[in-house]
Amino acid sequence: MNAVEKTQKLKAKALSLGFELSGATRAVPSPQYPDFLNWLSKGYAGEMGYLERRKEERGDPQKVLAGAQSIFCVALSYNPSAENYPLLEKHPISCYAWGQDYHKVLLEKLEALAAYWRELEPGVQMKSYVDTGPILEKNYAAAAGLGWIGKNTLLLNKKFGSFLFLGEIISSAELAYDETTDNLCKSCTACMDACPVDALEEAGVLNANKCISYLTLEHRSALPENTNLHGYLAGCDLCQTVCPYNANAPEGQEPSFQPRAEVLQLSNPSTVSMSPEVFKQFTQNSALERIKYPMWVRNSQSS
Image (cartoon, one colour):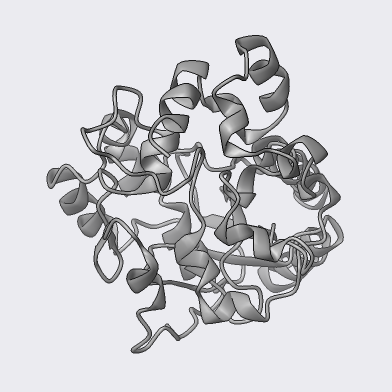
């Protein structure tokens, strides 16, 4: 089986597993790696020390998988339904965490895709990641033709917008590689204008120290004095909500990402009285499990 046939079969399998987008790119150092190092040197990563610790691996896929030739990238939409879309501007939790933990959902699908690949090509070496691997996944997804990097630093697709979870399989196999797409943001600055804390200091440059998503999800210590989280408790969707490419994007079809009843019923004042036991139950099997109870209380007191 040649590389073209193999890649076509992998894309068809990815689609059958629910991935709206898939593509392949070469397992070579990302041209954007120097920009990443510059971003780190400015301290824009805040307390995300893990980015610094594994920065060399992020620069070269060969350091992740020796002999790697290809990176097969996938995207799964979590775009809210028309019924729930209005909640994006006022709900205290980012919609990425309304349903089940996306890490588990995507990884299960990726493992099924990897198993299929091994049937096509016995002996192939692979490593699969969803968000947690030492790889600049947005840059490789863009290189694989899934979209382009918007001014808010997120991957954007002309049809599916930016509410996309990404995954990738680094492989020793050769594939047929996709072309990149044009950056269609052009002169639009809607995402930058919508950020209430000016975290997007330049187009495509995010200062995490200001970002509401970072402060609520990743910042473990006390929040800086006079921090205003603008009503958010976990994440922030403002820069995506205003994006023109999300306005007409189809809603995500993955049932696991449908909002849980307890999430839709959440009101900000109720978080203050939520006990640790109730909080544990509330966050179970969701992406919110990464937030510790003291962080949750801290966030509620700054919103």
